[in-house]
Every structure is written in C-alpha cells, then in structure tokens.
Amino acid sequence: MSEADKRRPIRSFVRREGRMTPAQARALEELWPRFGLTPGDDLLDFSAAFGRRAPVVLEVGFGNGNVLAALAAQQPQNNYLGIEVHRPGVGHLLRRLHGESLANVRVLCVDAKEVLARNIPDASLAAVYLLFPDPWPKQRHHKRRLVQPEFIELVRRKLKLGGVLHLATDWQDYAEHMQAVLGASSGFAPAPAGLRPDTKYAARGRRLGHVVRDLVYVRVI
Image (cartoon, rainbow, N blue to C red):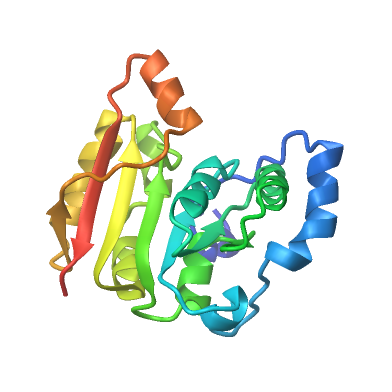
C-alpha cells in the first residue's frame, strides 16, 4: 500500500452512478438551483437556505428520496435536509419535490461526513435519520461502515440537546454493531422507536426474511 493510500480517508460508500434517465438528468440541470446547496467551506445558514426559521431534520443517504419527500409532506412545519452521493437518486427526488410542490427540502450531493464536519453548525439539527446504510457485510469491509464512534460523536455535536438519531437496518450484525457503538457513547440514551415511512430497502429485507430493526436515540449531553 502506498503512502497516499494510507492517508486516503475510508469511504462508507462507493459511487455507483447506474443509469440516469433523461428526466433525472433534466431535473438535476433545471431544479438543482432551486433545491440544491453547494456550501463550499462555509457553515450553512439554514434560515437563508430555506427562507424561514424552522426545525431542521437531516437524512443521511436518502437513496431515491421517497422517505425524505414523505416526511416533508407529512410534517411541513419542519425543514428537511438530504445528503446523497448517488446522482440518479438526487434527480429522482428533485422531480418529486417539484411535482409535489414541496418547498421545505434542500439537497446536498456530497460526502456526509465531510459536510457534517465542515458545513453543519453545532447543535443545529432537530433529528438525523440514517436508514439502511450500506451494511458492508464482509468482515474485511466492516471498517467502511458509516456507524463508527467518531461518526456518532460528530452527529451528537450537530444535534440539539434532546435531538433524535433514528437508525434502521435489516442486517442483524450491523444492528448489534450500532447498538454497541451507541451504547458506548455517553452522549446518547435509547428512546422508543418512532414511526417512519417505509423504504424499498426495508421491503427488500422483509422479502429476504430479515428482521428490520429501528434504533432510536436521544442526545442527552
């Protein structure tokens, strides 16, 4: 392994662009100026980004955006921020936001860890959703899992006191890993699982006979 490889940060994702439809590509070109954020090195000003002051809820890795759009429609009193590196999924969400006239969503197409560290103000988020992140099931790939102590500490800093972290997975060993990481953090306490919109990953997990686990925690310090 070269010195450059040793210094390269471990990614929790692989960019798989897949097939982007013409409609998704058109949405990225035409709707990104309305819904997309490109913050650079500055902290985000949520009031300016959304055009109002309201609780901000973040979804990390929103996939095709259906959960994010459903939450935004169900709870219009909140502002919703979504992070996703899969551009076809971003295009899919932008089309839905436009079609349903959902004005309370903004989108980032960047690495979640980087934007949390650099652009999200401390104690600014009311809730964070991390639903069905890549489980990286092979033992040698476990280091790529997003839920690690340093990431959870980063999320803790960005949540307000009393803010909620909602995790979900259909992989038992990842659920146990999540519980171990959160259990070792003095900054979170378990909370009852709340309701959330269903996802295609949850449905697929159930078809495969997996048990879907929702793990909810509250920032306490």
